[in-house]
Length: 142
Image (tube, rainbow, N blue to C red; front, side):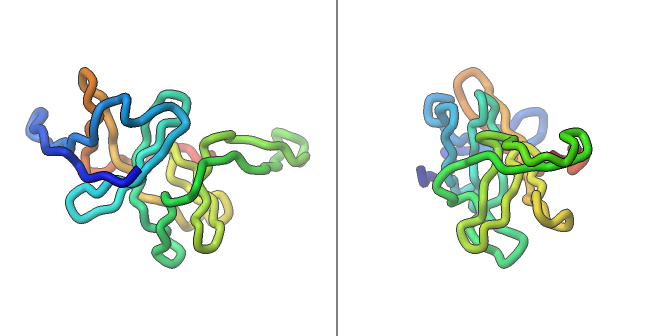
């Protein structure tokens, strides 16, 4: 999906861009939407909508243009350092160099210094809205 925002709503003094209807974002899908001068990836993961700036912090690649979201292999003390598949449907990999990002948090899995800018998304009645004001970074790492 490639689209443009469909107008702006003022809600409590904050501008929210109309991205479309909830039916435009079926579960498991993602697409790119132009909002003002930004390219934004919008993801529906298990019925929850997430929006990320479509610019990889590594070399400015179109990170959200990955063909699909996947999971990834993880190993940590909690799993006794055994490799396990995790985050199914929550990982997007930059098509340029393969860096993996956790969509709900915007965090890069392989490089702790990289993260994607996240935008707030809300559903009002049947409309999907996005605020360019961004979202705080106080989100636990995956």
